[in-house]
Length: 502
Image (tube, rainbow, N blue to C red; front, side):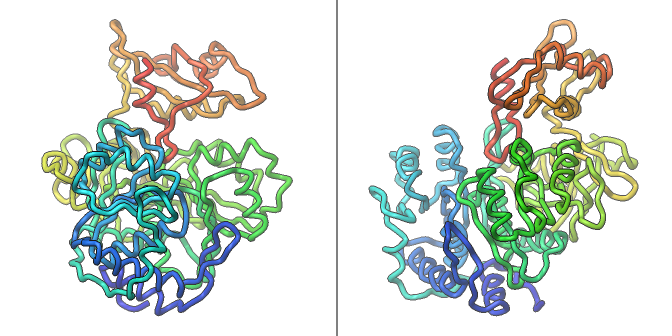
């Protein structure tokens, strides 16, 4: 491969020169050609410049999965702007917070979210352009912008802002993470090299593209040769199975809740022998869930990985030829990952501490938050707020979020330890564990559990299940059966929402 440019649009042009024009993307029954998409991206980029988008201006992207998501990213970078994705699952209050914080000049959406965006942006005079993929009241359409002549690339420095991504806000208000062109290129390069992508790779994309995952996936594609991407507008387990079978998909990306949903279906009735790799991230995957999926889909290897928005979205991954179940693998190329104590000293192998990351993909800092930036970036290392261990071979195990730690009677309890035990019970579909204030012990352990369809279990039965497998100080004294466990937009158990219920 030629020298890699540290500018996302120049990297995209390099990819087009290498691959040429071919049918690369499949969406809702139609193939999309890279040559056609390249022309549309250049026209859209020119239109954004004509609409007044300046270097560094933010473009808020709130869209359902469709090819126009990647087109919007690529066109924004050509025009010199920075992408700010917003999940369509955000509450109106959280969406308004992000918009007021990042102050985009342009918003881009799909018609089903147009009215929500209009409401969320009411009275904000800094937004000049409202764009939709299809007709929506008060929005310019993509077709309206395709009459422009193809435009060139607005030059930007590798250290200039390319993406402003907002954290999930699971422990507080969402913060804007600033990633430069260099951050994004180097993170995607690391992910590509670690993934073992083959020429002509077939991948099924299920997760929201208007999210950090979607952005890094878009950039990883710039490194591929002859790949074919199949895109789902929304994840549906039955549709996923049919698409794997029909299109002979080799690789797909899922989060643990999706894997749990798939396990409730008759997987053996589908021909899934083509599926070789399932990448899992965004939330912890219980080893029992991984092993059950591989037992029922013998051709597939589930590879769990880890990353933070602040680390360039990626960080570590298990490789097909080198993995340890129950870990999130080893660092990707160009990443160093260690466990530090509170004095910022590296801990011995296997001893839990704060996971810290060093890489050229690590963020520039938090948007308008110098104090929080200084707290997160110390001596060249990103302090993630995650507690974990690094063993003698470099395999990383994430124990829990530092802020989710429960201290019961002076003992440290990590919610994930209890959640993993609960998930071993055949009736449990999703589990979330939090601490509840307690006068005598400081905190008491409370578990929220949703039961699989067709299964039954009582709170007493689940408490006893945990008591048999956990230490006396650790097992939950209270299990609440819930029809639904709140999840964040990327499929993590929303412990902040659970704590609010207490």
